[in-house]
Image (cartoon, rainbow, N blue to C red; front, side, top):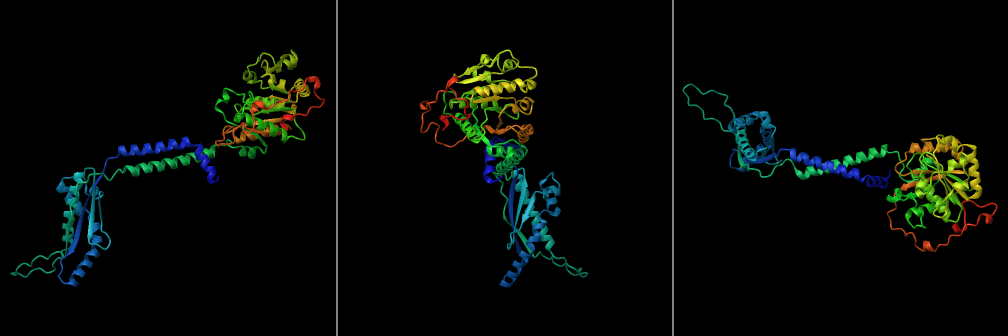
Length: 487
């Protein structure tokens, strides 16, 4: 996946990213609220040598102090310093616990030692820092004081004690800190945001890896190796209003069905099908909506079209048009009525054969010889016959019906149908020798650009639709899927 594709994935998964950011910021806020503020007090000492006043002695003393100041800094947190501080301030900490809150550093090429003490109480942190500096200076001076090797002679006066060659002086007393050094709100919030983004990236990558549905028409073509004849954009109101071709609508969905009609015509120039079964791998992918609007689009192009509701499991064509569903296909198949007795008109221009009463054996009924005869009869009377069939994978109805037709359209819903489901459906149709005309990508993401605007350059109401010829005026061999209105 390239950078553009990854950005598209992130844009599509923005709710996940937003939730992860909220979780990260919330976790940071929780950590801040639960953390006890810690204050830091600072003090500084200067290391000096007791030497002569001439230049040579001063340089020698400076070099001596710089050479030993790093070693002095390591003594600050030892028990020799912390134990007296605990006794003096009557602290409840152990020397090791106090030492863990003391840090000392000696800047390079200086004779300074910076001591930092952290504590939950700001005033106590300052008191501990001053006490550490005092006792630390005493420990260093005591360690640097030379010891005499010879005892004085009997009767001789005691020798004067030797002085330490170094002395430590406090250059900066510890002040009571006003602001805590921990927690750091901005830093913690930034860490929360970063953690949320990393979590979002991981979840998005995981979901994309586990998501086997197709998102684009190009991906659908790669999965099935079939031509994608149409991409129908998603419309929130499609569930309530399936008919997009009503009154020569200029909506995006209507134009998509007109494009599907044109692609279906020109993709099958040499052997144009007259009986087309419309199905899908699983339910809920828009096959009935595609059947209805494709039939209306063909009718608007001046072709005699008959729509058959052959989904004898969950028929919905009659409900879509508001037609009577008490008699229809099953009534004709069992010989209780003729086609002309139960056929109905939708919108005054489309012949519809509803499902009729639901039978207990739809698979056997749809694959019987009478069904083949009925399709041939309708193909002789109409230019195109569109058959809305049941999904391929859940039931065997379409497997028995499809060989009776001239071709099959496979409808696949964007971001819902799995790749394995699509392959299994296509393979099931191929194994029985069915001619799959192509795929239709339904409920695809809508185009967000400006576009030309449907209706640019023509007015839909002014386009003359040729009146279909009467039954006795039709030529002996009508050309399926073509009309002068499409030229």
